[in-house]
Image (cartoon, rainbow, N blue to C red; front, side):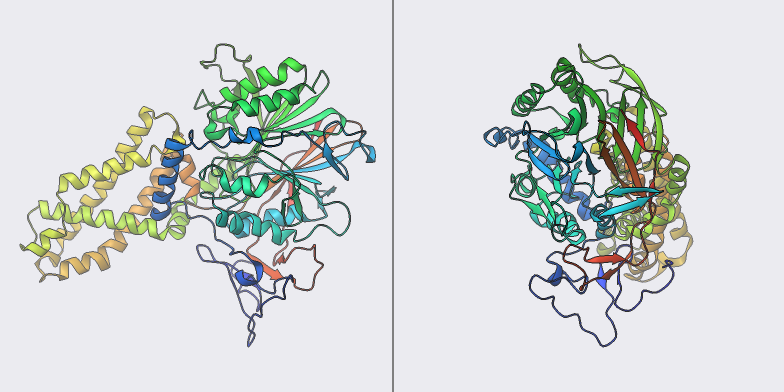
Length: 605
């Protein structure tokens, strides 16, 4: 259905920035679904969860709340680190094969030793994008560019299963609910698919409490038709033909705890020359190390001290955290970022064409030899990413009205302070009460823009962060100066009190909000060229398209083929299917999703 056409009666839809609500049929009132039955509408009472819109990342309320949680996590995270406590939990090493799930060392592989495995990351954001990906993952089979790709018997989640911060309710609404809606019951044919998860930084903001309750339940947990199996926040899975998959938990990108190292040393005791390893860390530190030379240290230590002494070969590293697809390659190893599970799109056009892993400038004395890796493919492509970046001028104001209101308020207060300093206002106590000293207001504006240029994700603060922050602040003050000139040029100040204040609120504030919003968009576009506020450039736009995941095929001859699957446009409208089979998705997209290969199939012998 084209975007400009109205939804059909009974169709489920959501407009940008609005809650998801059903469009009722004429003279029809949505009836509660029968106990244990399938929902007839996108109704929280029938589904058992509330579909959420995408996180408004520039919302002042959200920013302040998230900042508090991040601060608490930074201050007390080391004291609340539950990984040390997991030493008391089972340390079993898992095993997966076609139609088979057990523990390492259990007999021969059935069914010729083949296995299909899916990987998705950064899933728990708005319903439309998350459910679109979950819907594709749950399909019994996908036909993609002529390839028939069965559903993975194993689903590995690469981190950040929930946004913006972890809690039981957020997991229910933003992750568990959408995935249960995509695969409500165990498939009628074949075994139940299994689900494993690596915690990302957003999963850690509550000390990992909600993550452990959902995923670390041995064989007793489930998310819809998927069965959870892991017994810790990290895991090792023995796969067919001497393949292994290791999921790491690196809290705060800081270090790997001793119980986790002991667990993986027990795994390493089973490895030897000829074994092939896939490592799934919570973030693509091989890319992050281009700006933060310490980012790759923990992963390099793990490979150098745990895997390399066994003679096993790390053939693939897969991570999410950056919400796009990017593959760096050299003979013998693939480094893949696949973070398109549902969160806002992250740009690709600033990715370097070549990286050195580990970085050449490292403080680790015994680091592994630094080797070059070339960028092979991205999704979206770099030209597409540049084009999407220009959309900041209209997407940012549209998706962040409260943030624009804050900018307008600051502009209005700054203008009134400047007007007061110009000694052109009507005298009176009431007038002076709504103003702030001009110098103080200007200093606050510049300080605010400097803080904005140095978010937590920026890592080490460099001179370019300060320079761009100060220039942005001066431009913001300059805009207020222009507004002051316009204000003084009009006969507004001669009006009787409180008419000037009312005009400032009703007229000046909205106009200055739009102007300041466009100035902010221009700043983000320029700053991104210097690798500053690149995340905010796209987070503010909240682009829900360009999603994807990986489908891995471990073949009977011992090889591995990775199929990177993407969808250019996620679903917006949904039709309920109350009469479908119990294991069928609750909702079908109004416009069919069109999965396609976003990279050539990657074959690893």
